[in-house]
Image (cartoon, rainbow, N blue to C red; front, side, top):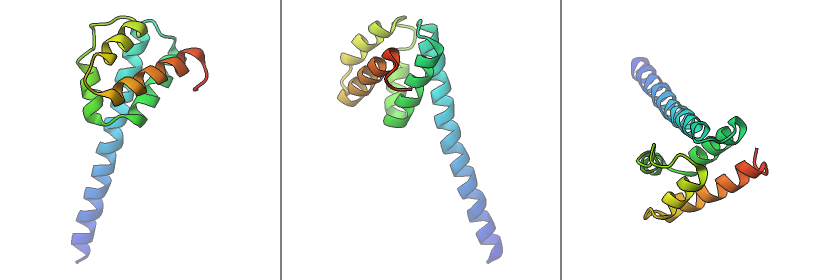
Length: 105
């Protein structure tokens, strides 16, 4: 019985590590992409944090498809608006506005 509990606990720890690791990795990739697009480091970190907190991993994968196409924040927001996911457009637009102006840090 204790062996089963240890296995379940180990699986729970592994699942939690994978969950948080995936989100951390996604945030780092977003932060890097926004910094390369010309955003300040603070604003890029803000955008990465807000998008990872508010979007699902599937929605973040949709954003990844835009990587490299639009080298500016304005171009990215315009491209996201053309996507068929309204939530991505709202979160990206509001995050870009708040993070670049400094209202969300």
